[in-house]
Length: 343
Image 1 (tube, helix red, strand yellow):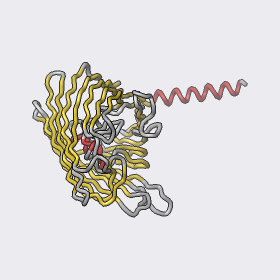
Image 2 (tube, helix red, strand yellow):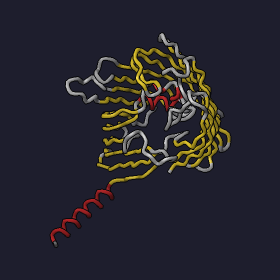
Image 3 (spheres, one colour):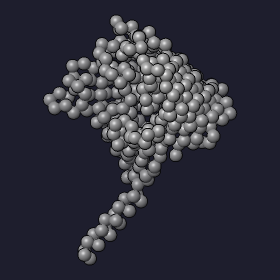
């Protein structure tokens, strides 16, 4: 009994020592609001939604100093729907789950489930962010994907103006290294008012016989009184549209937007145009307008409205809907008001 108590005390001491040496923080975002949707296959609907402006989440972030500018890092981030309390992304840590090493002034090497470089590119360009109710994810980002599993990512974190990341997601299919494989890269230049990015993503299907490719270039320029946003994206091959894989796609996308701050408020506007060059000719144009009012550094109220003009019929796979960070939506028009809090 005495030996068991000593072992338990020793284990507790070691655990406490490990925690003391590692800087672990808990963070999150809680977002909820009222959404009214119209223009879909079904009738209009009004609902309480979660993650409308940004997906609700709870995360754990840690850094351990290993000396010589080297540090061990990790992120475990789960998504959830605040309206029902259920888990999001179909996994415990479905938003992010990775561990890695960071060398100060050089970069990070990260292993696990991570955001694609293309998604990080879109987030830097879209005034609403890629996965909000009025964002380009409704009819543009859906082509390239948001996250990669089984991924090794190398990201530069130097103090200069260049930003870059390269990612490789293992398909993990016995006998076929190309099946289910994902690859991506991002290169950018950020200095003063200028932020320019190029992002690329390639994904293979389950048997490695087809792939999809998306490339985006664009950026922002901050005039102080307003920030201008411009981006163009090309997509070919096997892509994901409204959550469904579609082969032989050939589209060109355009996004133009602006962010106008005034006092504790920000006005956001964007226009996205999908030019479908395949035989289906399913063009889609979205106009979005939003406003946010900061109650504090961590809490804001928001409202936005978005409308998509689809050339494809309402029952077509290429009929795009106005969704958000937690839902694909049901119609081509939506309005919301909500509150977002960061902690």
